[in-house]
Image (cartoon, rainbow, N blue to C red):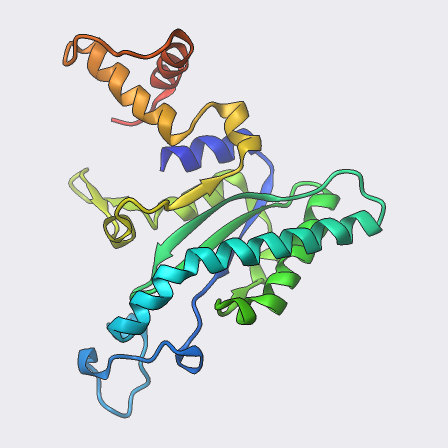
Length: 243
């Protein structure tokens, strides 16, 4: 959550969050009717507690990241070439993306696009147009392009993504989302290097912050970090607004 918040703050401009979903029954993700708790004549939905059958879920989830990498590469190429044809010397791009586990048991994506400048907006529209065209052939499903019409601040995008990772309970404790628990060691989100270079906030740096906090509180005798990593960790620790 902190990696998302700090890095989108580093960008600071307008952005939009586009959803890239898994396909439906027609593409080989049938519902497991044995898990349904509604009447037979009611349409299945993840919101009703319905789940996709176990084997198709496992196969799609295992392949989805590979399919996404290929789809993302092709769509970025399309957007870059489209912008170049209009004479733009600078490009737009992806700020970050995050995986979320849907209630029906399959993964889908939230992609954050740059929308501050005219060139960035043009790039975003071309990128999403390519997503809509190519997604079915690369194993992905519906693309929600409506957010392109209503850009929002980077801070709003950060809050939107964070709620899929965890949320605060009424008693002040943190409830971890099923997305985090179901991911294991799998990468949940990607942040553009153009942001992390400026902010210094990566998962590795945040792990170092946790180590330096423990060292400063006397819980470990040595932090074993090189001087540069130690300095970055101290800076991030002093900037922390986490409890």
